[in-house]
Image 1 (cartoon, rainbow, N blue to C red):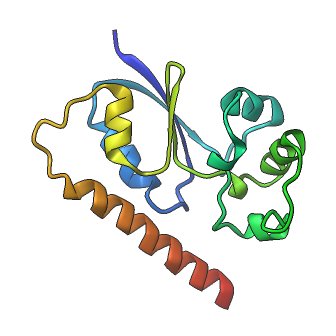
Image 2 (cartoon, rainbow, N blue to C red; image 1 turned 90 degrees about the vertical axis):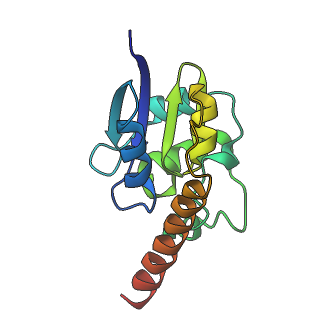
Length: 148
């Protein structure tokens, strides 16, 4: 029986495609949710976030972070979840969920650790490349958005 893994992604977010491609190479029951075309609702976000600290889920590099003035004030948990539901750009992605475990972001080694997958001699620099590519693409996207 394959392990079920839920993958929350946005094709516009840097690094999401690389993580998806990596997960696709594994023997998993991969369930992909593109939150840009099918945004998460308040009940879905509440179930996803559970008891975890909200700061892990907030995309501080997003325009929504500034739009909601989250750099100036910290709203309640309920209000923050409602903000994310109204603008999924505020949600940090990708999110990989397996069982009751979760990894947020592009760190391949954390994902492998969560899924209990051995490295098998993979090049450790691959994770650094994936994270760097995500950062470079995010910076390029931010630059394009500020000009446009």
